[in-house]
Amino acid sequence: MIECYAYLSRAVPDLDLRELSRIIVNSRGFNATYDITGVLLYDGAMFYQYIEGPSEPLADARQRIEASRHHYDIQVLLDGTPHTPGAFPTWSLGYLMLDQPAQALQALVIPADHADLVGAFAALAAESDAM
Ligand SMILES: Cc1cc2nc3c(=O)[nH]c(=O)nc-3n(C[C@H](O)[C@H](O)[C@H](O)COP(=O)(O)O)c2cc1C
Image (cartoon, rainbow, N blue to C red; front, side):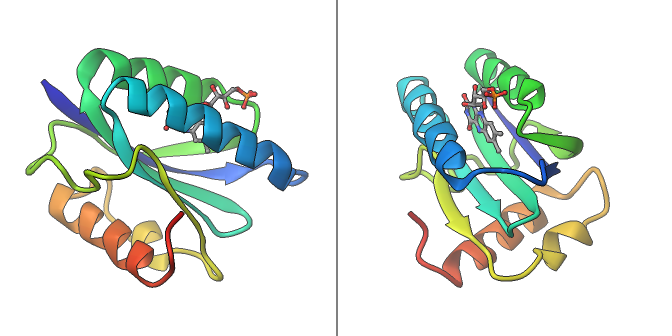
């Protein structure tokens, strides 16, 4: 079964961008192996992430995400079954740096509506060239 997981969190204040690029490369490797797709946004202070994929590997990824010492104050926006799977089908983990906080994501009522959530991530991703 395909499930999804989305959250926002606070990056540690001394986050090193080289360390972040290492995290992204590792995450992409795991996600690609297990058919997980999604997107990670970073505004310089907060992370916003949406991923979806088969339940077991998604739960593994979630465990590692929540255990990471590189962020804290994780607020789960949504977990469960996506309304329509395949939000970011070609991205094992699209990444982009925002030049301002993602207010559309911060304003979502939790648990977020899946379509609203994916729409907000997609709109933010479309504003910039996701890598
Ligand atoms: C912002 C962020 C996003 C992450 N995304 C994923 C992911 O999509 N898939 C995954 O398997 N692990 C993900 N991870 C976990 C990392 O790949 C790695 O296991 C973890 O960062 C290692 O712990 P450390 O950050 O304490 O060194 C993420 C970690 C962070 C901090």
